[in-house]
Length: 262
Image 1 (cartoon, helix red, strand yellow):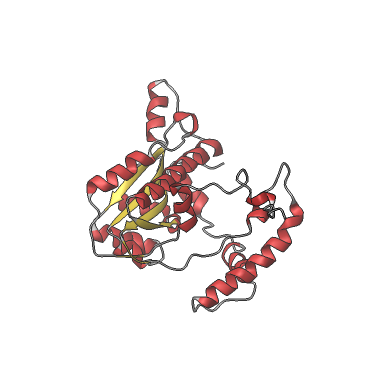
Image 2 (tube, one colour; image 1 turned 30 degrees about the vertical axis):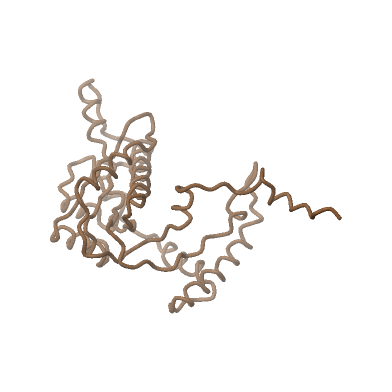
């Protein structure tokens, strides 16, 4: 009798590929509790040097990073970020900024101006900063560091600019706490792969079923962790947070810092 042939999805040519980098991403969680252990300057610098090889649109490299170790500065940033304690407790905090100062210098030397810059340049610089930030996160993980992104730097970008001494044409897109993990939370589930990935054309028919399944899965995850939640956990959360126009003054604040997203 012939041995059973494994399903096509399990054959050698179809078996999912893996690597250290893939596993790092599959295992990723946001870590907010750190050991009382410093992170050396040379480690931070190595992480950032690697991160600066991230893709950048047209090689504009429209980003800068402010490394914050000073306790009082981190306390001020934590207050701006809704009193997130881990901003104070982490050994090192990185502020990833969209930075148009070098572009402005190049313009002015050639008789041009950044005045009235439009959505494209502001968007590209923000994407550049985000690509560098995620690359830094992966590089940091590879040397044993863990962290969490802090989008609440956009709660009051003008105050953050004052704390960090940012000049005009620079704003903090997000921050990152980094340190050696003291403890890590259970990994939060993500939406179904097949519901998020579309082949050739977008399949809108997937949306309702995907959201319903994820509501149930996320509710089960939170309850297993001892957190009270609604049955429609994800839908309820995003509706309560984003249907009321969060950070409604952000456009005006960024315009005051030299980023006119018109």
